[in-house]
Amino acid sequence: MERRHARLLGVQGGWRCVVLVGTSLSIFLPVSKAAAQATVDTHVPISAGVSNPCTGEAVQGSGFIHMKIYEAVAPNYHVSMEANVESFQGTTLTGVRYVVPEQVSWHTIADTDGVPVNSTVEEIAQLIRQAEDGSLVAGDDFYFRFSSHYTYNGNGDLTASFSDLTTECR
Image (cartoon, rainbow, N blue to C red):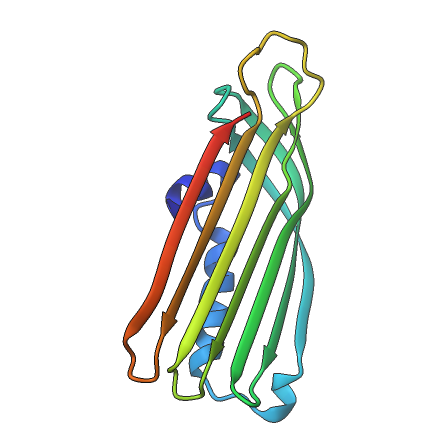
């Protein structure tokens, strides 16, 4: 699934891998009280090739990833990450224009020893074809939604989990 979505944005794990590894490390490394109040807020320019599985069109474009990470250690460990693809626009070789909004949010709360812990991930992405000319009657916009959650109790037992992936052409 992750490979499919990475292919959607034309990145092989790139920024998502960096975010997940960095945030995962922050869970297991000691954090000082001063660091707990730090907030990461950054814009990173991106350029990528995108493929619309609904039309088979290849799109080349650019935009920004805007990422925010919030972290706290008291009364227990809490980290939230939000990443949005902003202003991503691209065109096909035939001149069709696309916009690609995407939002990812990730939220984890854990005791300092790692359990109990719960985490929720939500991701929504769209490939929206502009200036429709009627040549594609069926859905030409691609929608992607991923949602997951897990909870481990104080004994480290998995007590709740789900994962849901929805893709459709509209």
